[in-house]
Length: 225
Ligand code: CA
Picture 1 (cartoon, rainbow, N blue to C red):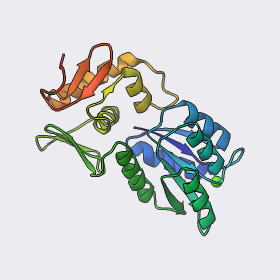
Picture 2 (picture 1 turned 120 degrees about the vertical axis):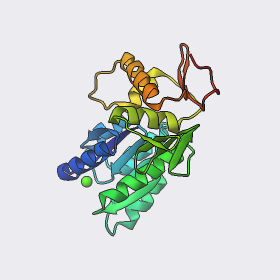
Picture 3 (picture 1 turned 90 degrees about the vertical axis):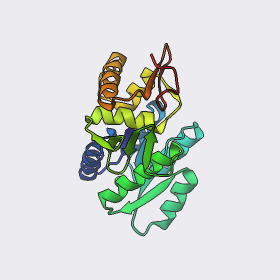
């Protein structure tokens, strides 16, 4: 899962980046509305944290432009205390949720998890595929109830597939959603990670679709190669 943070306050940006990275997301950051708009317009994000008071282009305008252009990623806006008008403008522009500054980081993380789950059509925090269960709150993975330890990237990979269960996901799509902007993209790396993930899970739920990509489905459902 890959998240964009658009925030001009350096200290707050640092805290958000750190907390999101520690929670297992690939994170990109923009410090003004122009760069933020550009990134959200050109890169595929699973969610965006958008401050409304931004230099260059304000957050409400950025959001309106994304929505006009058909961008559907969930957007959590950061609003100033007491500025109820800002919230209304944000929701009217297409925001999905908001947090008022100053906020507790845990609240931002919890709201983001919920937004990402719901955008994938899931309401419950636990996602499962056959014997594999991912708790999106704790990022813990179990197979037949036994905990499995995954690296941050393996976890991101599994989380993305879990959120898009049953769908065929291309290697390019996976690459774009598990790495941040600065990473040198190499789709062969995905194959290596998929191999490791399969080995750790030990159950055949990641099916290869030749020439297309991968599909997460319970063992026996989907054409395994
Ligand atoms: Ca600001």
